[in-house]
Length: 328
Ligand code: G3H
Ligand code: 13P
Ligand code: NA
Ligand code: ZN
Image 1 (cartoon, rainbow, N blue to C red):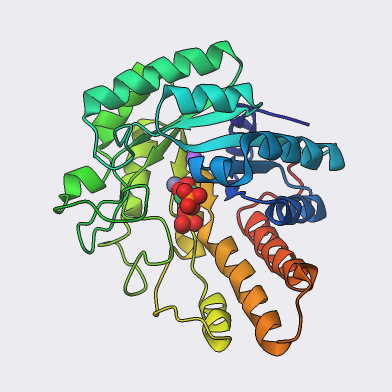
Image 2 (cartoon, rainbow, N blue to C red; image 1 turned 30 degrees about the vertical axis):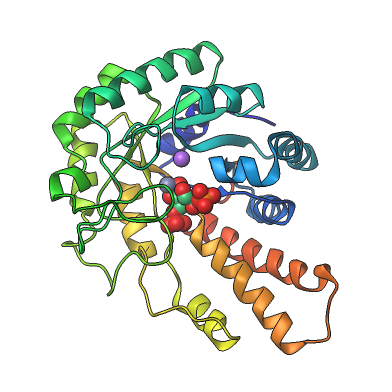
């Protein structure tokens, strides 16, 4: 059954757990998420980026989500627009049946330029008014995702901005967060504290200098009733790096967000944890392994089935680690 983000995160807050939000682009990823959730009886947040909507096609994606929800009628499913860049993207997501939208006003509509605070408040407030009138939830973002190690902020295409950002742009300001939530009435707030999208987040296991979990604690103290969202929360597991590299991949050594740091966030108001890269790596490792071990194979099912299995296993592990088991 379809459910809004607000309903899911209110339940998570009442019961002290956090929900992974997994990105979807195709059928195999959708099945992997639902099979994992079904095994542990966890509620589901499936999210689609603008790139996912254009890759899969809006109509195909919308009907795929309908099919997934119908397949598991007892699992609550929230369909969320990831990183909406403007009111039009959020409005069309709602037309296609999404029950939640992210209005990411931390960047301008080009998804490349850091936006002013005034722009962010204005566009997020307008989207929230529109979405709430349709019974749809809204996630806002305050602060620019990017690396505290390098000062590189992150544009949507994964490339850094020209010129470096300072810590005040890369870390959400707690005073501004209080003002932002009051002004926009968002249901959930994504904050910046040193994570970035993709596999190359940290050049070593992160400590408090590069992953500022204390910012989350401070914002939660100031906004105890606001659901917080961590983006860029893949852990980039060593074993997945190793599988990819053992079967012909070339990923330089890298570090993600350790699960224990995410759990610390969940203790301090984090209710939605965005994960895409880990699933991409699980899928890629499994496909590489089949193609290397069976070079004569050419039936896509021969590598897509192990790929789906690898993603299912990872999704299930995060549901268990974040305390979602039995919460559906
Ligand atoms: O926002 C980042 C997610 O990993 C989605 O990535 O825009 O390449 O689909 P994407
Ligand atoms: P990762 O790249 O760390 O998986 O983050 C995904 C994300 O934040 C999607 O919005
Ligand atoms: Na999102
Ligand atoms: Zn994100």
